[in-house]
Each structure stands twice: as structure tokens, then as C-alpha cells.
Amino acid sequence: MPQEKYTRCPGCRTIFRVTQAQLAIRDGQVRCGHCKTVFDGHAHLISLAPSPRVDADEGYDEPALGPPTVTLRDAQSLEPLSGGDARRETARREEMPGEPTKGGGTAAVEAIAYDERFDWERKKKARPGMNAFYAVAAPVLVVLFVVQVLFHFRDAVAARWPGTKPVLTAVCALAGCAIRPLHEIGGLSIEASDLQADAAHKGLLVLSATLRNRTAWPVAYPHLELTLTDAADQTVVRRALAPADYVSGAADVGAGIPGNSDVAVKMFIDASATNQAGYRLYLFYP
Image (cartoon, rainbow, N blue to C red; front, top):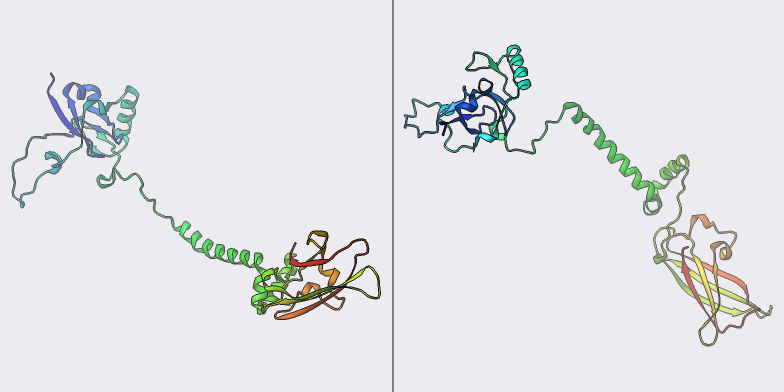
């Protein structure tokens, strides 16, 4: 069996078991199967024999003696150079400076940090231009986010903070939007209601109700759902009434019901074609 020797890759410091016959190919030029560094196997031969103790002051040649723990791979992991690779490597050695080799030429070795050879997620250093971009982009994105929030919740912002309404109104005039009263059905209630037959007009019913806005800000006028029922509380007829159907002409429907205020509702309903014994009245937003 040919005598085995050991050579070390100068890039990743992996140690390979090799034979003289293997090193004789291409004058010892091989490629590391681990990090793909091309090097002279002759020039990096090492011994794995136990090293004699030396004084701390004398020092020792660590690359020659080998580290206490090594990464050892067999000869199949060490790739001989092909003919084309060898010619390109020879031409590159003649043009580029590098470390001396046994044959008198130079070898260009790709430097790989020993401590980082298993660091598969190396962080790239941020370029100064990117730092400047982030410094400008971050505040711009924050401003755009705030503007978007204000746009989508402009009605709530204007209602809860009235001082912002003039600014939001001016912005909406440019953007083609509008500031509207909030649709807060939970802030509204029917304080009282009544449905009576009109004594002066047969078949007419008079609906009277009081709507209460219990919030501190204006809310939009709701729709009313009036349901007429029979003696068994079954639905006879149902009708939805828009604000324009029950709000008086003097009221500004677009401004909504002012905060902490009441609205009186009175309207006539033609029920000559029905027979009813009761009614139900609800508030809703379509």
C-alpha cells in the first residue's frame, strides 16, 4: 500500500490524507473539495505525529505541527486539476503574486477566514448609500402611514377633535373627499314613540318619536324601520324611512344630529289599505 501523507488546505485548513502518486499528478496542484481553494499539495504537507513539548518562550510552528483537533478527509475529497484547469492555474500563477510553491512558481489562494468557515449566514456590511436611503425613507413612510390613517378615519378624528375639522375639510376639498357625521348606532336611542290614527283623515296614521344622540359629537341621522303588526304580532307591512322622509326642511341632514341633543320626529303614514293592531320602530344605518 502506498505510504500515506497529509496535506492541509491553506484556505479552510482542512487536512486530507493523500499519497505520493496522487501528488505526482499535475505537479502536486490540487483543489480542496471543501472550499475549492487551489493549492500545492507538496508545499502544504504536514505531519500528524505527536509533537514534542516546547517551552512557551520558544514558540512553535502551528501550521507545521497541526492543531490539536483537525478536520480530516480522505483523498477522494481532494480533487486533482484537469488539464485545462492546470494550464489556467499556471498562467494565473505567472501573472499574480502569491505564496511560493515547491516548483518555484506562485499559487493564488482564495483567503477564507478560519473562524468563519462554518458561518453560512454572514451579514453583509451596509453600504453608506443604503444607510442614507433608510434615514430618508423611514420618516417618509411614517408620514405616509399617518396620512393614510387620517384619511380613512377622518370622520372620527373630526368628530372627536373638532379643532382638526377645518384642516381636514380643506384637505378633503383638494382630495375630493368629505367630512361626514359618524355612523354610531350605539350612541342613538328612541326616547319615546307613538302611532295613532289621524282623527281628521280616515286611513292616516301619525307617527311621533323622539331620537336621542347620547354622544358628545354629531352623528348621522339614522334610517327608521317601521313595522305594522296584526293582533297576533305578525308583520302586516314593513317600511324603511330615510332621513329625508322624516327630517323637517329646516334641519341640516348633512351636519347630523348634534351631540347630547334630541330630534323630534312626526310624520303621516297612509295605512288605508291595511289593518293593523300594533307597530315596531327600529333605528339602523344602511
